[in-house]
Length: 262
Image (cartoon, rainbow, N blue to C red):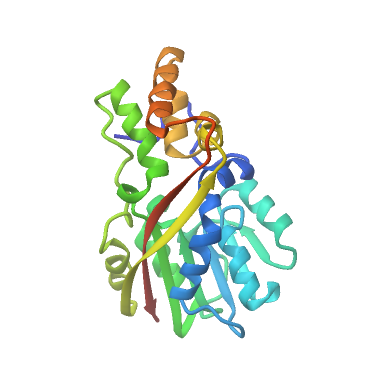
């Protein structure tokens, strides 16, 4: 099973606002929990790897100040948005596997909802370790996809239309034990893993559905690969699963988080 189809856009080379409506909306609750787990506090210099439009960057800036935060992401629209939203933060285009920062430059290096999308997650974490000072913190979190109704609702509907679709591809970091094993195998010590809770409120069905219709994320890429008849069928199945399309609702999710020491 693949996440993209021939000719489809990558799932996150999209406008920042689209990502905000899909998953960025969970960062106001996930970001503080992740920063707490990593022990982020005033006086530290920190790096946000795979920053996206800046959901976690906002929380890091609040804790340590703009001058002490750097961020990086491979998506040009996301980098542009993160820079605009966080003046004074050093935001760069680049990938985790080749971080353009000096060795031992940060007290803490964090990757939120990223490791499952890295081309080489171990290489990415090794780079995170390299740019972190001895005794500093390296942390990563990623969605437990099985416990993310915002994702599972779509794939349950898709499976009703196309029984060959069993759900979103299982990514590194999405299972218990994945993040801690990744950090341990990358040379971090005293690694501990916890589950982080996140939640988001939706105004109505359209609020949840719009980013998928726009092709955001793996679900959106798959949806746009369908013909019009199947798109209509998937949308109808989603509406039945979500319920009253005009009512507000809240979805909760879970991410696995691992924190280690260099």
